[in-house]
Image (cartoon, rainbow, N blue to C red; front, side, top):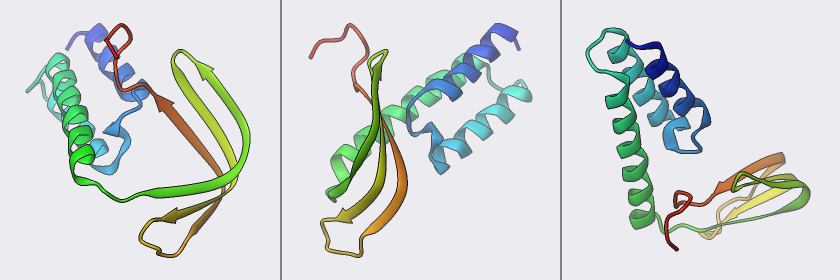
Length: 122
């Protein structure tokens, strides 16, 4: 396995703001790591698989999830850098539209980026 390809794959795992960091995404990346280590697939194929995973999860959530969530808190810090918004919110209360019990948190970090790649149309 080429060192450059492996480091590119690792960069993807660390930097992408995607579903790769969910439990199913972590299981997928662990499996891909094993396959790469056993030289059964190359890192480029793993990258393609992760890209397809990101797209499939995003589409499934857009089509199938109808629940709404509201939250309220005090904005502590915000920043916009490299097309990514970051918000740090204190004393946050979350409420689902189903009227279920609310959940509170002392601190919440929200990271938001455009779904389109830079240079793509609106």
